[in-house]
Length: 59
Picture (cartoon, rainbow, N blue to C red):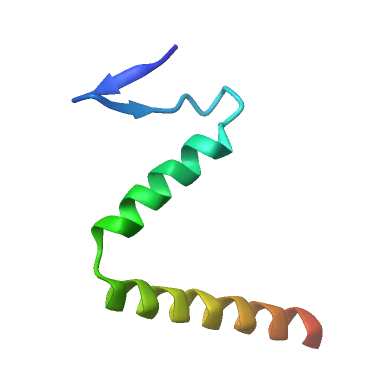
């Protein structure tokens, strides 16, 4: 069952989560923030991924 909050669809986690819908939310969110913040966020995410990969290799 779909619950709506002020027109915003909240996915029921028991259902299979629609990735297309998820990426639509992500795209809307990213387009609402400034490009500079987007670049900084991307750099942080890449840094975290590299850190986890390096830790995984060392173990």
